[in-house]
Image (cartoon, rainbow, N blue to C red; front, side):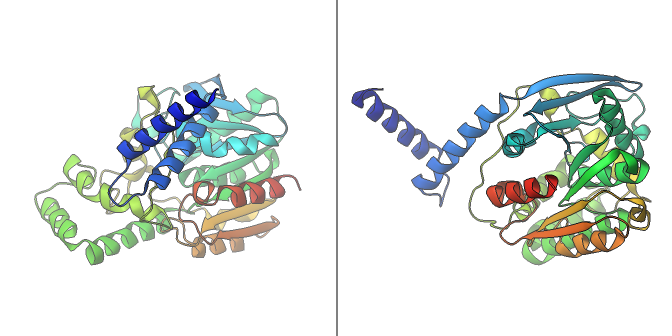
Amino acid sequence: MNQRQFWSASVLLLAAALAACKPGESVAQALALGRSEARAVQAERQWSEHRVATPDGELFYTRLGQGPVLVVIPGGPGGSGHHLRHAFAPLARDFSVLIVDNIGRGRSARLADPSRYTLERDAEDIERLRVFLGQKTIAVYGHSYGGLVAQQFAISHPERLNHLVLGNTLHGAASWQSQIDGFKVWLKLHEPERWEQLLALRAQGALTASAEAQALVAPAFAPLYWADRVQPHAKAPASADPRDAFNPEVYAAMLGPDAEWQIGGSLRKVELLPRLSVVKAPTLVLTGRYDPVAPPLLARQIGAALKAAPSEQQIFEHSGHRPFIEEPEAWRQRVTTFLQH
């Protein structure tokens, strides 16, 4: 690139940053986000795509890197793994990272009967993937809801696990309801106008799964997932495949039609803490100091329940629900060091 081309490119980047600036955001912040998102797009393209035949249809996963297998289970329930590709790509320096779409999510098959979307069935997806890969044991990283799947897999198949990472996760219906109640209290205290509108909708019979209720609560709750609720954060590259969109049918089947008010669905009676004593694989429990979904208390409770497994806990002091975005290098080093021992 000659000098003229360099300055032309710089002017174009600056112009794009200026155009993309949001209220209260500096050009420097917009430029940094632009570079971060460009890197994310590049990383996303490096993943190879694979499918596994199962009794419930095709199970889709993406793969990047060489080395010991690390299976990553996304959150939700209802989310695909597409949005995790850019954040988990750095782990591929040392591992063969596989991000799986559980059946019903992403590019995997859908079930004709939504009542069959259960935690136990999701865990069996991981076992079927292990068998397909021909691995005697695997390492598993479960993020958020995916951490529940990872716990269930560890309980059902403890001998098939060599390392377990539970990232920003819960341990059952009681902890999930506690999260719901905490969000409701926050809404009532900090956005009383939205709270009153939500109560009015409920008085009319609208549950929180309704479009009207979601339009009220989603913008209020989204910033709570970050330690820094003011500054913008780099977003994962948007997928051109509509199958990667969040699947509300799975969410409703597992959490019920009023999931932002009262847990229901197939998860309503799930409690994993009493069953974690069978887990023997080394386990790392991660959370962010400001995570409202899976706060440090839950990490301590999970760690205490792992009576037979050597366990470690890590609180990222400058993170909310996604330390792999807010503290990416510290997160990568911590996970890598754990998995290599």
